[in-house]
Image (cartoon, rainbow, N blue to C red; front, side):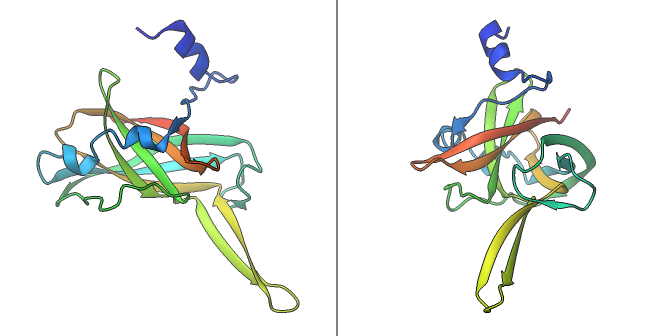
Length: 178
């Protein structure tokens, strides 16, 4: 089913599947999760995300340690409320994009989320001038609401990165739902 070229392109050196990069504009052609929800029922997934090879509770500079990007569903909960409708579909640098995949491997919808890895720090120097730093948590929890009735088999997680012209989405991993 998968072409040998595609498989070779997405399997990393350690045998881990690596999602190819894509433009942020490419996901905006898909409907949002709110648009594919057929009722006010969703499944809320709480996912443990091991971001990097770091001690538990560690804050690290982005890309300073080898990435792990291991996802494990901790909890599933039925949620009965209307999904949040995106007013602005622009994707920013502190956001993740989650793309829903059906059992046949087709992309059926997307959603943007705030990146839970990010921790910002501002500290004054000796003269009192504030300067900031951005850190990533070595491990965090990601909460995703998946629409019921959309036959979602998995979700792919991407991070937004600015390349000077547009936001690109770098694949972080896939979370099987069913």
